[in-house]
Length: 107
Image (cartoon, rainbow, N blue to C red; front, top):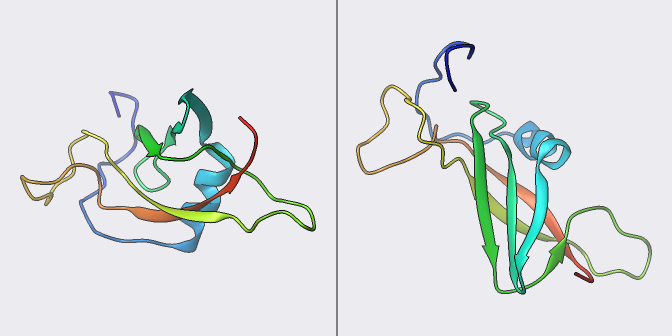
């Protein structure tokens, strides 16, 4: 978070529908190699920039048209290394988790 950051967010394992909505608007998707995507953007709870690898298949984020396969939903967890009071020593992130839809598509 850095010196300009807002208040420190305490660690809490929590989810909310708006987390997924915000991540869908702000995350980028990059295919780093065949079968591996890298999702990246600000955590919708603590705003720390995180990168999440998704393995095994090629996906494309977005809504689909009639006849396309339904999105596959992946659970994403904040993996930041920012300080969050109350975070167990064995954990990373702020505790936030959410689902994001990924749709199979051409690379």
